[in-house]
Image (cartoon, rainbow, N blue to C red; front, side, top):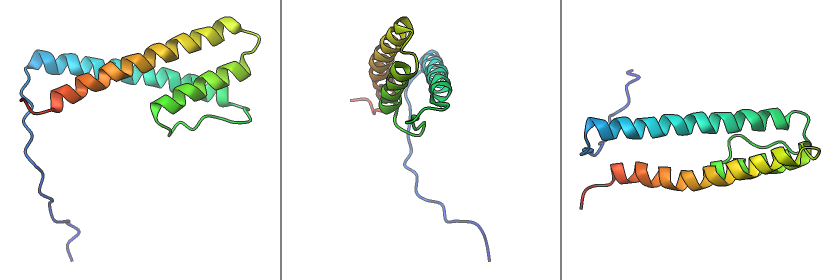
Amino acid sequence: MSDERPLRSIPAVRIDVGDEQLRAVGHVALQWALLEAEIDREIVWLSVGAENPQNLGAKFEDRVQGWQRLATDRMSDRPDLIEDVKVISEQALAIKVERDKLITAILEPAA
């Protein structure tokens, strides 16, 4: 009995962009991954001992809201840091919209 599964039909996709564009998109994706990792690292740190820790498996928007909530709950003596989390969160959410548009535009077929 073979363990091989039948191959599914995969539609051919042609991404019609040059190396420079692919490098730029890769750079954006890598920088985004680093930003998310730093936010998640802080969420983990703030979640230690918290009554309501943030689920790291949640979508980005929910994690950022959880980060703000945790910062407000856990750093009440540091309003400056709470404000920093709020500003970074708002900027990250705005950047994500543009990042998603960029990635989607590369994968969409030309009109």
